[in-house]
Length: 238
Image 1 (spheres, rainbow, N blue to C red):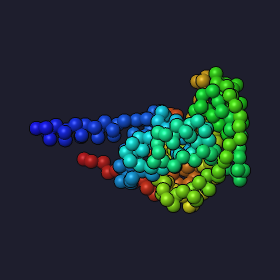
Image 2: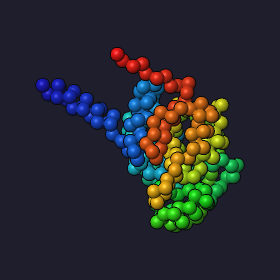
Image 3: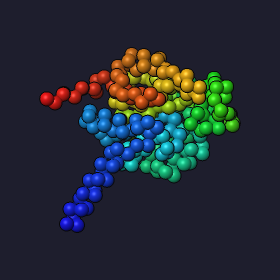
Image 4: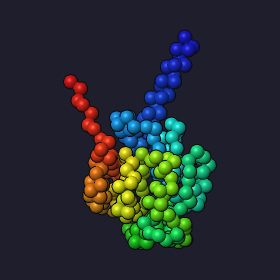
């Protein structure tokens, strides 16, 4: 009887973990379901603009399941937190960029989730929200294709979480999709505002369609894209 109870509680734990979410709107649960649907795994992630290692993370769920990946985050305080919380992951203390510059300005906002390397984005946040600039510092930077060239061979990224406050489209435009085509992307596609005037960045959808990705799901804030060659609609059961 005791063995049966252990088996039951283990099954319950697995079920709970499948539904456990750390993302802002449950995106990680949707991505987990999509990987199972496509029969792809294990998950190997590239988290661009990682921020907190747990809160609002699109990749922590997969870390708990045993997956590993590369997290890119320019905020030194957050990098220390990531390294302590997720020691199996590789964390790059750099800003992802689309230029050849080895350093870029990093605008740290009073809400660290809004920190950015894009001056116009930082200025807009100061003008339109209650959040303000706390510091501007130089941080190391690395081009998105340099990250992929250096680490994809070892990690074989099949999931990308992209949230870099104003630079998302630039990164997607610079990304060499002829060489690197992760199966699934989760991208912030909504502009941030406190005035209820948020709008979808239509250019991101155009870019992803242009390189052969399809929208699988949308949480309003984030959109989940799947590579067209990977996606085979499930047969409807009669």
